[in-house]
Every structure is written in C-alpha cells, then in structure tokens.
Length: 265
Ligand SMILES: NC(=O)c1ccc[n+]([C@@H]2O[C@H](COP(=O)([O-])OP(=O)(O)OC[C@H]3O[C@@H](n4cnc5c(N)ncnc54)[C@H](O)[C@@H]3O)[C@@H](O)[C@H]2O)c1
Image 1 (cartoon, rainbow, N blue to C red):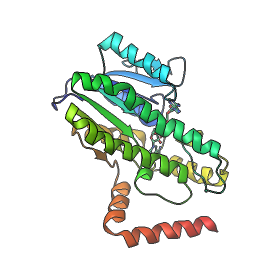
Image 2 (cartoon, rainbow, N blue to C red):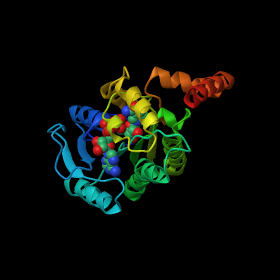
Image 3 (tube, protein in one colour):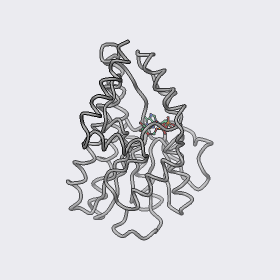
Image 4 (cartoon, helix red, strand yellow):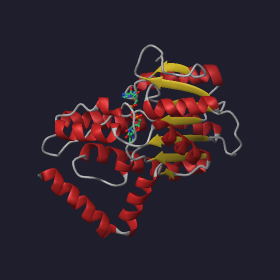
C-alpha cells in the first residue's frame, strides 16, 4: 500500500484468487476501484473471477511463474503496490500417521509459496520506497491444536516470516500484514490430500460447517490492511483463543490437553 491512507487505486496481485478468500478479496478490491491481477493454478481464466480483474496463471511454487506474473503487472501498470500471498492448501494429520510427502507439499505451497512471493516483489518495493505484503496465515499459526502439526508449523512459519519482514522492511517504506483467520467456509476442504483421513474428515467438517463465510473474512482483512495493522485476527473466536494463550495460558493449555485426549480415543 502507498505510504498514505487515502483510498487511491492500488495495483494488487492476489494469489489463489479463483476460490474462497482470494476470490472474495479480488471482488472487494475490484469493487473499490483497485487494479487487481488475480492469479491461480488454472491455465485458463477461471469463470468465477469478476470482469474487472486481470488474470494470469501462477503456481506459487514456480519462480518462473512469479517472474511472468510480475512482468504482466509491470507491462500493464508499471508495477505493484500490494501483494496478497493467499494461496494455500489444507492438511491435518497426526505425527505418526502423516507422511513426509504431505509435509513437503505443505511447506512448498503454504510456506515457500509465500517466501517466493515476498522475495519476488521486495526488490521493486524497495526501489519504489513503498509496498504492502499481505500474508494469509491462519489462527493455526498462533494457537496450535493437536493433530495438525504440518499445517500449524507451516502457518507459524508464515507468522514468523511476516514479523521478521515487518521489522526488516519498514525502513524501506514497506508494510507487512499477516492475517490469521479461524475456520471459514471455502473450497479449502477439497485440498486435503494427506494419509490421515480421520483428521482430514474433521478438518473438512470444520471448514464446511463454519458459520463464517469468505466475504466477511475478506472485509476484515482489508480493514486491517487499510489501517496498516500487522496482525489481523479476523474473528472473535480467534481473538479469544489468542488472548487466552497469552494471558490465561493454563486455561488454554487445559483446553488443548482435552483436545489431545479426545484425539487419542
Ligand atoms: N478456509 C479456512 O478455514 C481457512 C482458515 C485459515 C486460513 N486459511 C487460509 O486461507 C487461504 C485461502 O484458502 P481458502 O480457504 O480460500 O481455500 P480455497 O481452497 O477456497 O482457495 C485456495 C486457492 O489457492 C489455490 N492454490 C492452491 N495451491 C496453489 C498453488 N500451488 N499455487 C497457486 N494457487 C494455489 C487454489 O487453486 C484455490 O483457488 C489459505 O492460505 C488457507 O490456508 C483458510
């Protein structure tokens, strides 16, 4: 985001924009008059995207695809103001059930995908003396329920990366926001691919059965971005859990132990 808070049109690249939170963010940004380069893994433009958004294929695991997407933004707008690292996949798995292949998939998409995006845009953001990195982590990056070690560890990595970059890049005029939503309804459930089918079923139920939808989470993320907040907890459940962990740790630990016992039954 530019250094001031005026609602000027911004040039925004969103990853994972074909579905769920990325799509909701893309729609809101287009409605506000921002220039949006929506990206996702599909070669063809997804039908879900609003007409006001441009589309470019971008698998966040692919450095060449990052270069091509940034070249597209350069050609059309002369650069970018905001990068939203939203693309992600779901995982849930007990440590002795989940495979290393699944850990690798999670790290590649959910952590290295974000690292790649931050690395790709930072030189240009530094050169222009402004920019905003918006990394979509999860409440799982802050509070760590049992049975989700790969997802928790990788999302905690996104939280740590974001905090590091906030301090590292502030002198260059670059803001960093990390969004940590609790479960909300999206297509995320379809991306479970691990060996722990029990935990995948639970995760799918939590995503599909959430009372929150992607639109309200997207609106909360954008309010946080506009206010240039670093940590955005998009919902009440998340704020309660995060506060309990920091301020009432015994209560938090007891709840997590109960969850661990339930899982072991
Ligand atoms: N839905 C939830 O309950 C929830 C909770 C906390 C955090 N999140 C996070 O929100 C983000 C968005 O997920 P969502 O819930 O909207 O799910 P979603 O499945 O609806 O959307 C994710 C998008 O990412 C894309 N994607 C997957 N792998 C990709 C890759 N390698 N390169 C580029 N794009 C890729 C998918 O094609 C999809 O369009 C994710 O980072 C997810 O971890 C979701």
